[in-house]
Image (tube, rainbow, N blue to C red; front, side, top):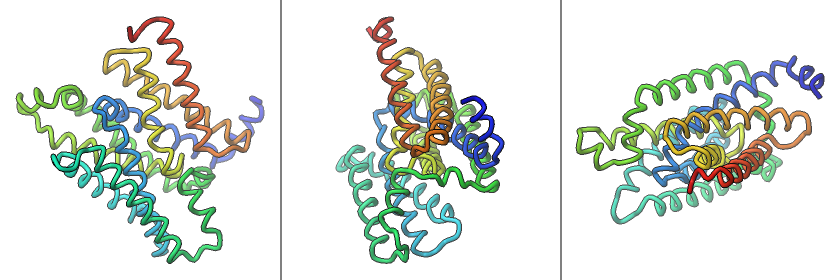
Length: 280
């Protein structure tokens, strides 16, 4: 098996997939802890469906680089979702559900009405659940992912203390002069960027698992914010790296394999946490 892995690693497309997968896993795990603690986990699910709708528009318009269409629409939706969620008439979870269902339905409707593809079902399934497109990345796409990932990690490190304050106690953070709305907006926009980057890896329906599972697993074993964040990042990177290798060796779907390994890792952490009594 080791020889087989070494054989596949000789190919650039495999190395590109591993680099992009590891970077996306790292970025999603960092913000995933914050989203879980703020009880806003499914913002990733809502925005991923928006990205699906935007991708449908880009495909109908025959835009060569779909990122030009998908990225702005997803970021704007993240901002609107944040504003709507703060409205007393429309709570955060209701706003996410409303946006998620509408975007998913509109995306599928657009693809049905205007798509010129002869395999519509295959295109939809590929977009929703991921595909081998992670194995067809160009060097330009890899560099774009590297640049965005560096920016996301830098933003998290620079504003770590503010993100920590906003995550645990918005009222206290606002009382000491922290721009709570501004940092919530920063978190939402960052998540939108991560989701767009992750669509080729796990598909729009599985992105929320990539964000949530590592954070929940880390919380079974650790209690401090820093420890949970670090372990979540390490676990997410390992699961994604292993998932890509297994999918290449076994011929299984990349996204589903990664999420399945994340699920197994969560069960292992849950059992270990119960045995050592971390959460008692």
